[in-house]
Image (spheres, rainbow, N blue to C red):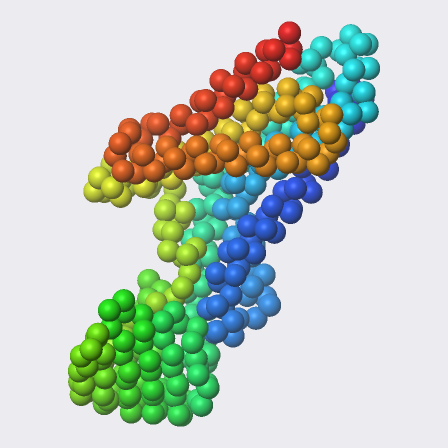
Length: 353
């Protein structure tokens, strides 16, 4: 490898790590905020939060690796263009392809990493995430509700218990349920116990009480010996079971499920490959764009990278929605990538010529 290539590769890697770290933090905070309600409610420790943060990373890397790579090329070569280094190198006889060789080499390495994340690492980490959350719920949900303190970590429920036995049974339970769209419930029970099954569904099994159900202008009072409530855990990550699946599992579900669900599995399957392959397209598009963005400095490269990726993602969502509603065949999920590839090749040939 030429000395200039080693120097450029070093700058590319530094410019790649910084936005990768920043983008992961931004996306991770959005996920953590959705998890924090239930995690803080069950008394999760700092170590528990750290484990969950690690397990979230592979799903984020699938999105952030292509974007961080794209931004790094625009920033690095944009800086070189602004400092007239590219003009000097090309004047010395270095061709366009040789000058941008580090970009293509780095894109291949990142492609292999992204495929490993998409095909192997992400499904296993997401399954481990579900197991970790399941374990936390089973171990600590009973300890989270303290006697005499209102507990509202379950979406749509307010729980108050007067006392608690060593075996986890609560005494003197008042529960307000507003999870229903058309009715609200006020429930009093002499005793009750929280149960979590293997599928991470949480239930509150109440005994000997009254349920006051209000629906519109009417109300009903029910006396019960046993009453079981399904307590919904507000967590988007654990609801996305497609992330747990391998490529073959997604393909089998896409073939066997009903028509609408089938399209959801096809969309997820195509994403597992299209996002990694986006690296190769960006490796073609970034060099000519860097010559434009370099005239305005590094901020311009960052802005241009985010703008192009946002536009691509919006077009991708548009085609995926058409596929989801059966207006297009599922293979049209690749159309945004093909369009971007065509534009990239045209721009590259113009600058190379």
